[in-house]
Amino acid sequence: MKRSEKNGKNTLLWSVIMSAPGPLIVGLGLLAGKSSTQMADFVRRSAELMAIIVSYVVYAVTTKDSFDDINKKQRLEKNTDIFVGGAMILGGIMMIVSSFVMKDTKTGNVIPGLAVAILGVVANSIFFVRYSRLAKESSNSILLVQSRLYGAKTLVDSCVSIALMSIVFFPDSSLSYFLDKAGTYAVCAYLIYTGMRTIIQRTK
Image 1 (cartoon, rainbow, N blue to C red):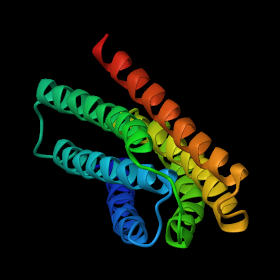
Image 2: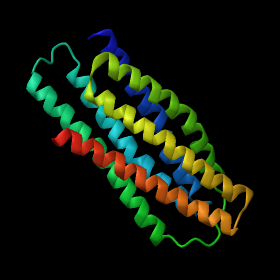
Image 3: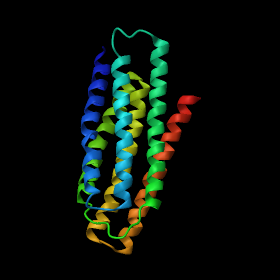
């Protein structure tokens, strides 16, 4: 395994480790809070975690020295990229559905979700830079799609942070309600756009 491939594998592994607690923490936070942005964030993080795990497994398998079937490697990478794109689209659609199904009365405690989102902005920015650099070094499509995913995750976490922060400082106000909904729809739009872009490029 080349050094760049080993770095890519380690980065993907750390992505799985760092992403795994997110859905759990945000999910537990939903027991105390009912923000539609927080609910949407839980769905989104769960879908992304599955996509990252699949990406790690496929990358680890296809970069082994013993794996020399080029056609199979390209096929697996393509399917993985499409799966990641699909996960982003699914996350966006489910978030839209949850925002309509969920009735916002009192949003409750959104601190857990806000803490995860703020930490996500920092961690995802670091991963975005690292994946972008690794994708240029290795020209591996899985790493390129991960750089897009983490770019989207960084922007999404920024929107979620702003929305949940408004709920903390202006609870039950029209401003927090507006930002909560706006945050949800902004997340949905960007996820669907990024997912469709990835799938279209890989199916040409």
